[in-house]
Length: 209
Image (cartoon, rainbow, N blue to C red):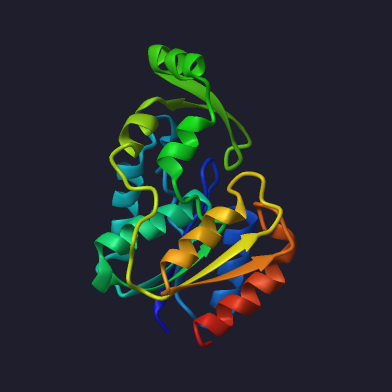
């Protein structure tokens, strides 16, 4: 079966519980699976462009199935829209559509000004289990990208009805405008870690495993 490339979320890592869950499932099924570290160990200099370069290296010409969680889902959509022959299908979990505008809207004008003036701001990084500085260049670089990437490949979107980070309405609206994307809403929040069995069952059907 086609190789799986898994893209973790913001301030996460390839050691996240979902990444490890899917790694075990796909390895047990004999399916090649890779989950690159999207910040390459340099969280402070994180950008969308830099992460897309890491994705390109992991895809390595394809074809692959891209899986992504939250920001990783947004990155998967961006990449698939720009590298159509390299990506067969997408599985997007709580994808952070409209990331550039949604992320910027999280902060007040004063907070953004302070962040820009300081150059960086601390964020809790779940992969490192500690606060790490993040440079303002993430905001500036993200502005270069569209909020809802249009890709032609078949996609499965899995989203929690109770998501308070990326509301499910974002995925509902995306699916309405993109007939190649099928949406499944689950009784869960943003992390989806309490419905991994359902995630796997729906993914396996979508990938015809």
